[in-house]
Image 1 (cartoon, rainbow, N blue to C red):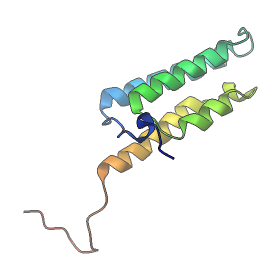
Image 2 (image 1 turned 90 degrees about the horizontal axis):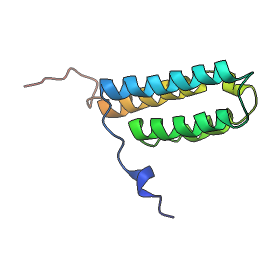
Image 3 (image 1 turned 90 degrees about the vertical axis):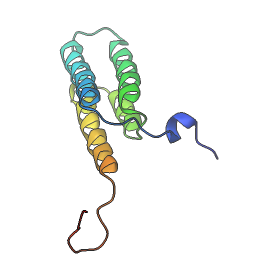
Length: 113
């Protein structure tokens, strides 16, 4: 089975502005859901979750952690937790590790000429 190209495409390079924008979207979504939680109208949380998923996906690229975060947000009470912020932190941490590349071979010192 072949995966769609938006899943297999290389993620965009992490830049400080992309990281700030992803955190801003996540924190704003979590804050709005916390504030609107008890008084929010039906469907507002789901609209925020769809928007957060789309924006974070656009800024950071597709990552499998976005899907369970979206599904957890559909459960009652969990929208009061900062799940989007946690998801963005995990995705950024994993992407930074990927962009650093593998460690140098061998256990000895590396001589850079």
